[in-house]
Image (cartoon, rainbow, N blue to C red; front, side, top):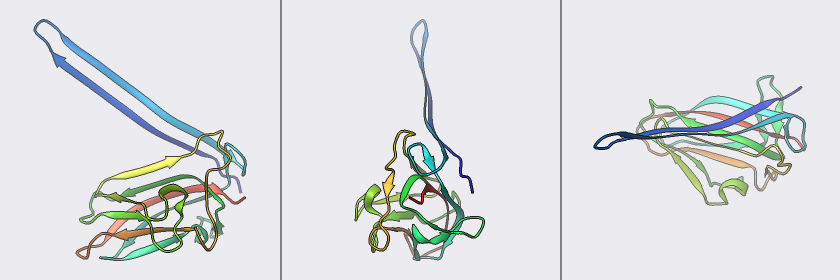
Length: 168
């Protein structure tokens, strides 16, 4: 099975200031991007998982990066390195989505106790460069859990997740 991935983050900002006789303007467009071909070396990935998930009020779930997740074809995925991760909290959520920490945490991105809080409508993502052969290591059984939590007990939360990485 071939996996080909493209990741990008774009910032576009336009500013103007009205002066006495002129209007000054500044425009910024900056894009960071990478393309990964199919494989397990630098500039490559061979595993992909994506899903829209819902957590009940106050619930948590552990996304086991080494043996729990299945791709769209039903194949169980065991990641050794992650090359890209995107998580987006639904804008219709009332509570926050919190990612990171937990038992046997996947710590190479957020450290063992680090978390990221995604308020309703907030998204975050990272990806490695095409020259990066290492990615973010996954250690089966001791460093492979990406914990996702609903921050409160009032309502459920929904989030989208995309994980791309390597089996070796």
